[in-house]
Image (cartoon, rainbow, N blue to C red; front, side):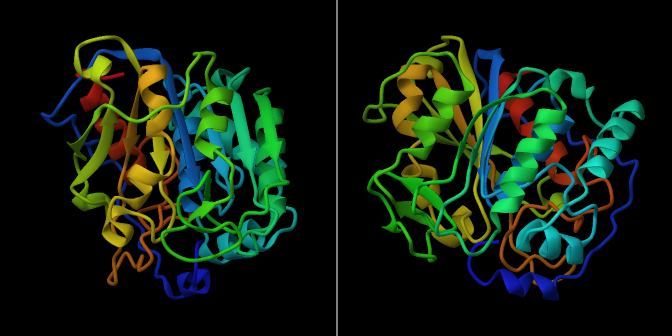
Length: 330
């Protein structure tokens, strides 16, 4: 998604072998993680990745926010379907997606979707977004509603292009260009964090530190060696803190835009008051198989058929990274 989404049509799917051992937590910084306060969000391909992580690990992740995303397993492992109904709009066949979800849970590939009941879900689609159709957001709403999640909001009236809306950081609100942060006088990060947690907080100047966090097994999953985490001082000093996982979109990793998303999306301004560690996983681009020149998260199967399950290469790396932050297997 993001600019030049049509370039994805040149991508070649590579079916990875299943049955590999999941990556183990790495030795790195660990904190006193409040396991009852773990949530996820993402924009564009990151929104697709956010719902995949949420559904696959619903026993651990307690809520999701999707900006310009779609329903779980929308592409069904097919790039042509992903770039078709999932991006251009139409009926993605929710009955089949829900049936897949239940079957995957029955086989132990994802957590029981009963865990999705009452989980808060916040959805956003910019009214000037011409890259991804609004139908995807509505399909995500209907998918989660079928599993009795709590739809906190469906925001459709902000005149944003395909990017992440901020108060005043980034390009014009209706511009589709790097770093895909759009100054819309709208605090998407603050709105979604408030929707996903009852924790009271106030926006302020970040006073914590940014730390590199190893992503175990990253090279096998077409990911960068390290994620970035914003850690408030209270969390660094041992207080119990929640974790919010924020997935960037295509062409928005540190490889493409440096720390623009990590520092500019607006999450960190809320993290101190909410006692919230913000984890920014990072995917890598690739011009060879598996072909991923725009650095998109795998939401159509370029890392293997099991991409949307616990055993999916990127989901497994993100979970191992989260475990590393907690200093234990969650």
